[in-house]
Structures are given as C-alpha cells and as structure tokens.
Image (tube, rainbow, N blue to C red; front, side, top):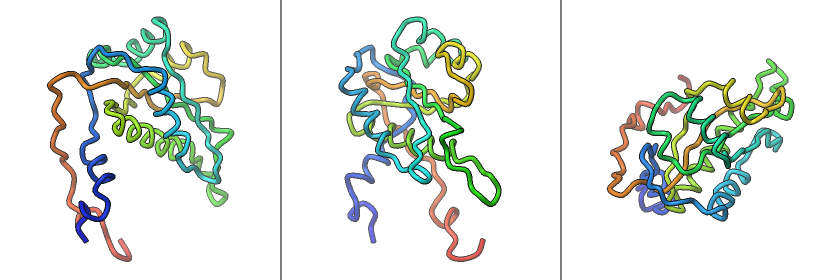
Amino acid sequence: MNKNNAYPEFYNLVETRYSCRDYSDAPVSQEMILAVIDGARLAPSACNRQPWKFLVADSEELRQAVVDSYSRDWIKSAPVYIIACGIHEEAWHRQHDGKDHTDVDVSIAVEHLCLSAASLGLGTCWVCNFDPEVITRAFALPEGVEPVAIIPMGYPAPGSVVPAKKRKPIDEILKWGKY
C-alpha cells in the first residue's frame, strides 16, 4: 500500500509540518487561535482525563516572560505563544508502577495543536528547553500545574521553505514481534 494514496491529505499535512523558527509579523486572529486549541481539545488522553490547560501569552509582560525563559532570539518573531501545561493530579497514573501520564497526554494534545495549526497555514515549534520557573511565576501557575511546552505560533515568514524531513526509514523503527 502506498502511503500517499491511502491517506494523501493527512500524509501531506504531516510531511509538510515543520518546526517553524521564522514568522511574519501578520497577527493571528483569536478565531484562528481558538480553532487550533479546539484541535488540541479533541486529543485523546489516558482514561479521558484531559490533564491539560493551554495559556496564551496575551500581554507584553507575559510575552516577555516567554522570551526570558528561552535564550534563543528566533522566538521573538512569533506573534503568539501558547503554553501547554500538565495537571498532574488530574492525570491517569498506571496502577502497576504509578507512572504519571501527564507528559504523554499533553504531548498528544500539543501535536494535535501543531497539526491543526499547520492545516490552517500556521507555523509552530515545540519548545521544551525553557526555564519552567520563569513561566510558573509569570503565569501564576498553581502547585501541581507544570509548564510542559511553549508553542510559538504564527504565519511563516515570506520565503520560508519546508525543510526536507530527516527521518529513519521504517525498517529501522519497526519490529514485528519481539525486540
């Protein structure tokens, strides 16, 4: 089965979605932000606990906190920042070993968010290498609510090119049966 023929629209979306690090200065409407968050809202989670909250940096003070939490200059070009937070006490924990699935569930929702954004012509980038204390203080996060990722979002800058995907071939990541 040729993957391009089996599900061409979805395959094109995941093939062309990339980590955008250069944004135009065009504003992103509240309607577009809501549409993207709605895509995240529909993500599955363990036992349907939905242990997440999404915060939009909607003031200069909060935008500056995002910039202060991450040391790379490119992030300043994004017109919108979404903070994906996990709520540990709401998450499902595996009975056998207590594994907390907050990060798993939030990650699924963030990828739904990124694909929703890409389907609307918006660029996004997962940012996990940030100072969580800066975000926690600036956004007044209560105890047990963890900032998991920052998602800069906006229209890619004019001339942006979708980079070629550098992924392992299927035979390196798939095993039928035992490892």
